[in-house]
Each structure stands twice: as structure tokens, then as C-alpha cells.
Length: 213
Image (cartoon, rainbow, N blue to C red; front, top):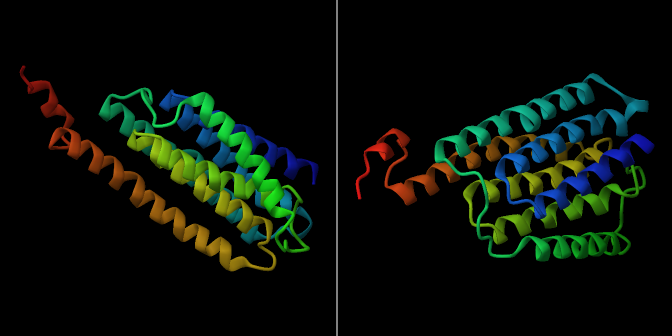
């Protein structure tokens, strides 16, 4: 349980880092690190009942969350030539305060909810809810499309975390999580292309060099 709790603490810290960071490159790396950590979660949380299913789930999660999505996002910020979230709707200090409050609310809320007895860690449900709250907050409080996509990924990570914690009794949650990952892949590229196209009337960045005053 110690290793599982360590990963959950890392998830909390990475969420707080995202709430307080304006650098998009650093935020993408943080989400990638969070994805790798969550990829290890099914193996550590169910090491006594470790199966090929858990191993494949871990490998797939690390590949998708830790490599594929970050690669797409790094490519997007390079093509859009953006590096920072300049003026978010909610400032970074206020975002951190809101995140800390959401963490406290998540722990309080989970004391009022019926939690499965076989859950991997008593911290798993609160951290899952906190990730969902943090992801939603990033979506509504940031202006950059990439920042909003990162928020959606954090939200999905919260759903995935809870699903992995109760995978023995509810494997359907994990399958839904895989389908949600596929949707995220489409969402990531779609929202970025939409925002770039809305801003510049096209998505061919080579044509931007021909713009005149």
C-alpha cells in the first residue's frame, strides 16, 4: 500500500503543479509524468492478484498517457508557436488556493460516500475526485486550447485512477477508461485544430510567414 499511496501523493503534487504553472511545455511534461505514474498503479495496487490483464493495462497506459499524448501536445505548441498561458481567467495563486480547497473537499466528500471495501487505498477515492475537480477547473479557467486539453487529460486521469482502484469488482470501468482515452486522442487534435483555425483562418502554419502588415 505504501507504493500505491506514494503514487497518489505524486498525482496530488502534479495536479497542484499544473494549477500553478504558466509554462505549457513544463505542464505537458508534468501530465506525462502523471500518466507514467498512473500506468504503474494497476500493477502496484493489485500486485497480489497480478495478471496479464493488469500488465497490459499498465503498458498501454504508460504508452498512451506518457508518450503518445505528450508527443501530440508538444507538436501542437511547436506548430502554434505558443509557450505560455499568458492571461488565464483565474490567476495562478488563486488557482492554487482553489486546488487546495478542492483537495480538502474531496477528502471530506469521500467520508460521506459508500466506498468499496476492496479499494486499493483509502486515499484513492479522494485523489480521484481531486483530479476530476482539478481537470474541470483547468478547462474553465484557462484560455489556451492546450491548457484546456491538459485539463481534460487530468480529469480523465481521475476517472482512470478510481477505475483501477476497484478493477477487481468493476472491470467495466477500466474498459470505459480505454474508450475515453480514444476519445481524448480525437479531442486533443480536434480542439487544437479548431482553435488554430479560428484564430488564423487556416491550419497551415507555413502560410503565416506570408502575412503582411
